[in-house]
Length: 304
Image (tube, rainbow, N blue to C red):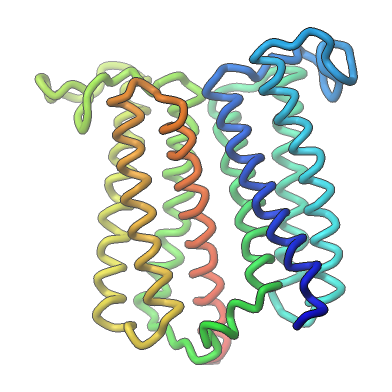
């Protein structure tokens, strides 16, 4: 166990680094710093290191720098985990997907800088980064052998919970996309009130931006209800299976924090700290849901 210390430290650093990439990208979008380095990539305003430093330049350049450094960490982790834990059936898939999605999101970011992209394409950028984060997170959990600590080899998951697990995870990605679309279309404050667009006049949205904002709120409300139901079902049926019970309990807590920060984004008029917390919570939630899918896949494999 001691000989795995270095790869564990490396895996944690890579996971935290991937979180910084996610939050850095959100910060770039929220501060409108995407063109802080001009239409130049990988250089910044014609220089390898920018000479004139403004807030926008600092945010964009820092995001690129962090992405480059963390990208190297993730490639090393993927190769290291493949060689050391290749016997674990999910390792190779997660190693490939963590690198693939990281490269893909970097290319989309570069394409936006060089040529510009539509809002609906840009909204995929955060979602693709999220897939890379989830892959790195699961790879880290495998490195730490979390499965053994929670006796996941004894887990038995019913067909009902399997369907709910896969369904809510796929649906959460739709919620993520609608949230990213809110940011990229600058629809965050198009509706001044909460929970309705205008609490004194409850009517259907009047334009595309209101539809995007209220569509995201409706999608978010549904995932809160869905996770509440799953948590209640697990509380009744799975209290003897720690990984399942605590996994869904924590998922419900995170989604409530996510919904709360979503509300506060509107009420605080797009406070930056609250907005970044909103991005952080959905990242953690999606990573956890992906782990629950991993447990489902293992449970299914054991019952065959």
